[in-house]
Image (cartoon, rainbow, N blue to C red; front, side, top):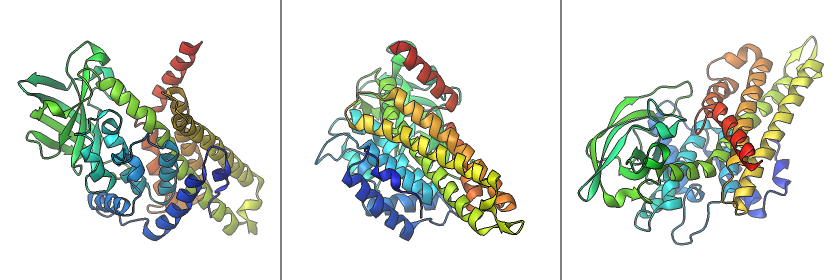
Length: 382
């Protein structure tokens, strides 16, 4: 049984603890799903999560509007990731994909949210391009005003849910000013003429990813989220909310690696005694436990700070993502080492965790970029 003592920390309220308990029961009954067909598995997960109400926290409830509860998002991602990395992916993309609509959409645009919260519509966040990943201000894709709408031309890549999404939130250059100030955000349904799947992308931890092509894709003016030129601010605001949750997913992977390692060192015999009696092994376990708790403190501090009404948590979220993802990589590496040959055997849980964790140190702002963000926040406050 995983350590759940962190739920007694003062960051949480009773409804968070109840959520964790109920979701744990759900996960034990429903996860993992069969990953043989990744697209089908992801669709199934979105449907199941939506059917049973777990996607409700990912977007605004238009009948009872209020801010997103970031602690709920983090607890959910941590729990899902501990059971099945693809389940975490499916949950997270429903929130990230519609974050711009939740935070900045008009009432007409927000009609999409009931469908994504119910698991009936799969969403995607289309920001990265072949030559502009972390450097969002260098975006090349254009959205040109034409009569009563816009025409989008260019490419997006590394788009999660690419190829299976029903709805894309697309960022493009509208040119109100140079660099970051000339970007805008648009709602683009998947069936829109001219939107194509240029390439499906295979990565070490299989997830639905794609490179998208936009060949004179026409959308109405009503597809614009916010005002022209607001795109960078919208994207950063969405990431400000969801970046902490990436740390939470990493935390879930790390907790699972620690749990598997504790079982391993208790059951495996070396030199006539359990592995856990070796001091070197105990040192590894202590380091893993320390990294898990330290990461949890940073993740839930960032989430709590946002939930308490902070306008921005740029520094806190960057610290949480950087530390939790980097330390989860180290924890999982130690788990592989403790499992010996089994740790690198395809299909073993710690082998799959080793593949799952690596991407989290890249997406939604690579670790090196997070260091720049933190430094600039600190120097700006000095």
